Length: 137
Image 1 (cartoon, one colour):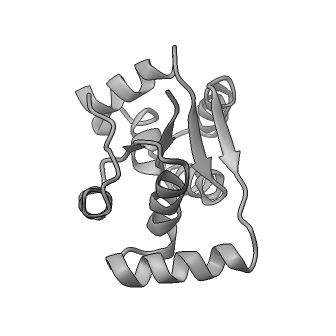
Image 2: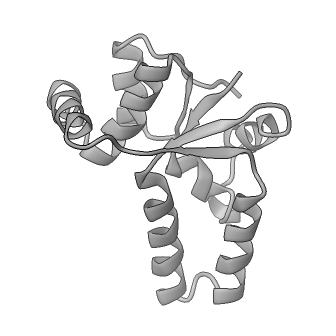
């Protein structure tokens, strides 16, 4: 079964200090399952890499290698439908208190009926509130 993958899990794969049993279990699932992400995901991934490079936490070669690794995983991007999608995210953000970015992950999981893989506690709580299953480790 497919699942929605958020950037908090994805980026933990890049930094050993952020890795956990949960994030590694989600990565292992990609051997037999696929993930789907909202259109904001690539921007979040690249932004974290840029910030890590600027802070000298990650080399440019490591950032590029991480992007290459991600490109080999079965991750599909769900593109945004303007303007209806914006209205839906606005309502979802209002009702849950989430940012538009996190609301995009939640809305995708709701729309597709897929479980959500996230480390974000507020996003987890909003998912549970809406009856969205969370990916377990």
